[in-house]
Length: 603
Ligand SMILES: Cc1cc2nc3c(=O)[nH]c(=O)nc-3n(C[C@H](O)[C@H](O)[C@H](O)COP(=O)(O)OP(=O)(O)OC[C@H]3O[C@@H](n4cnc5c(N)ncnc54)[C@H](O)[C@@H]3O)c2cc1C
View 1 (cartoon, rainbow, N blue to C red):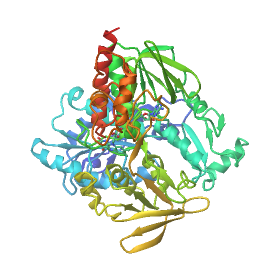
View 2: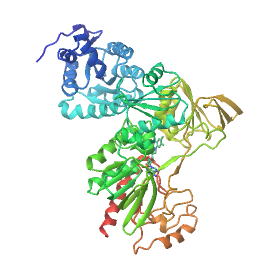
View 3: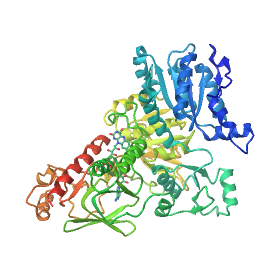
View 4: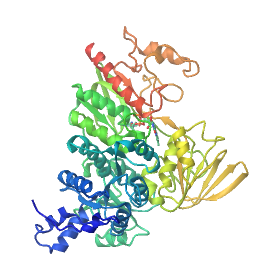
């Protein structure tokens, strides 16, 4: 075992920081560098796990356990008090170093663990925050989930770490890693803040979890230098720069998809099950279909996660007591599907046809794939704001469900959110972390009628969110980008300076590409199971049941989630009468696979 010099003061009552002994070990092995350079190099590239405890022996034990499991990937640091840990974080922040995890004891003199984590959140909002508590402090820890937004609490002792510590930290670090962009690595995108193309390109990369760094062509000197260095035309933007020195100028999505390693061509022509859409419903079907032996293909033009992918935090999904971002949920589910053997295709379905037992899906590039069973899980898309100016300014200050992609660009700005349901509430809370102020424009008299109580409470406790009820947006103004909004509120009409407006005003289904034989209600939601045979008052136009009789020629009635075309099932938000929740979409996607089995058994 290698022994290292430890600065003893680190464990004193005042606390202090002790360097990463493990890194010192590595410095000697890095050839071609001086010891200092090697350390700098290692430090730059390895994110930090920081353990905090005033009790030397406990701190030492935590550090040893962390090092054993994570020492090769992360730099393990320690602090003997909350104050010392905050000082260190401040220095790390100045050096732009990445901190992945803060693991703090709760009972410390001077500053409790919760207090420390609350302060630390200001500097490193993305770092995973874990509280170490005695059993007696469990109640306080649970309360801290809300106040300090801690991600997890662990009770002492955590032995054996293989069971009680590592699984939790693995999970948290995996989540952190998904959003982590290492310095100077990966893709760089140079574009204009107010360009629709640039916004779409960044959304595509973000949603596919491709790490990139965005540089504003107008404001960043680095961007101008990079364009010059590579002889790229500053007028032809956006441009994607790859680490191997190559670039793609204003690329088509499929070209970019292929370049970043996404599959755009199916491996086979025929599958047992083709799922269209990789939101929660499609992903659940992917997991159950593939795990139960069906050759499964999932088609998704954007990225696994669906609408949930744009949700900054889903707090009511079972099994995630501190919430989970939609992107994380999508990423995990995608991994699970792939693990079971499901194939993913980055494509949009543009048509569907039936030939005997085969269901064909036409793809945007003109190719087709076929299957015995087809599951439509295409969800809904944001309803557009139909006011003068909105169309021209979309992507130039007006955005739909882009809370995650645009949040950083709105740093220190005044942001407007229109809508009063949960999605608007989540977005407002997310923007509040970056923006100077967030104004919620709500048509109703209050949020109570349309938003969950936990979100209303959080909004009330967030000082930079202002809710303006009884307010409508009349028009959007601006030449190159959004500059002002004309509003109608309780005091009458007013014009407000605005650079960003995020719209969350409901959603419509995406079913226009389907043939008429797939019966839909008057809003475009797909009818399935009993809804085809027992018309509901007001939802069917009366003609649908007649149409059904002319289409359906089976001797049985449709299965619960089967559409008017045998073997074509529907799950999630796109289904007529569905509950618009992630959990119910997951439930329907899973159940649909059971019916797929029954349908296949009848062959
Ligand atoms: C901002 C926001 C916050 C939310 N918060 C919560 C919450 O906290 N809790 C909760 O329970 N629910 C929440 N929801 C609702 C939840 O996300 C949805 O109910 C759920 O995502 C529905 O899943 P789905 O699979 O049916 O559809 P979607 O999630 O809409 O996924 C459908 C997928 O199909 C793809 N698709 C569409 N057309 C095609 C095509 N032609 N070809 C191929 N693919 C296609 C889309 O790109 C999309 O990825 C939120 C929604 C939003 C927008």
